[in-house]
Length: 387
Image (cartoon, rainbow, N blue to C red):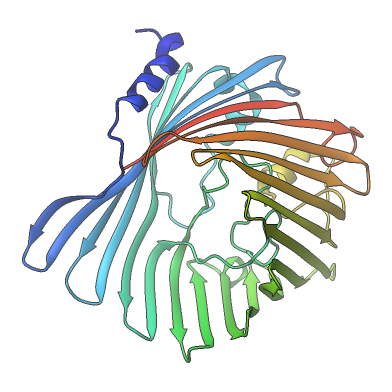
């Protein structure tokens, strides 16, 4: 079977999988147990690459296996492994060639390329690896983990670790941090968290501490953090005004160069009984990207989901339950300063209790020197099976 027939084989494989997702017990002896769960995913994306003379197709399959080691005590472990296989003309694109051999953003390099033959590329990596000690009032985690800060839907400046771009085709992929974290539930209304990432030098360290307080329908978070050489002071909230959800974030970043800047997000969402959901968000970025003309790629490769060229943005999304198994969505991101935008329609079909099929696109328009006008349109298709 040639590579050109591989996507059809993937589709057939997914449809023959079991209808419901459930974890599997691999080993059990007295109180010790090893459980397995995970998912398999196929993602096809297609676009015209402005940096590569021609059409770019990216076929990526990913198998994630998560092993949970239960001991019958408050201590347990969890390890998630990703096996990724990629093929298509994306392997010839300058951006992929430039980035594939770059070290990961984590402290430890737990990645292994098992095939790199020009027309196919495969890699195995550790997504999570945690030792957890959890009691009624506290939780301690050591290893590769993610402690998510922030409440925003599209842009989250409070998530100083690895905020995800609103253009990401796999936004659920969230890079972990190699370090230690702790959560203390001091009272029913007050929670403290702290996270420290491994680093060789203090200048490269990533640390953060926060306090969270619940009052009526609102949760208020106050955070102080250090991201490499930057100090970050942050506040976020989430709650309700009657039946409408409201959320907001504010950060102030202090750096050695004296280019201190604020970032802020304010959003609202509402769900109607008929299956209609609307959400809107405004983002202000007081610290836009600075492009080095001698090395313009560096800023884009190292940028995060909240690093933008311009300052003012509006995002909105609408979802509607077409029937109990199908949801239609459309997301619009608008660059207020330059007048460019991204329009992203999509359709999600829940084929079974474990199978999800989705497809859509991202269509860019407006000023080419704006945030979104320079991007080529992208079409995508996903299959996901959870087990």
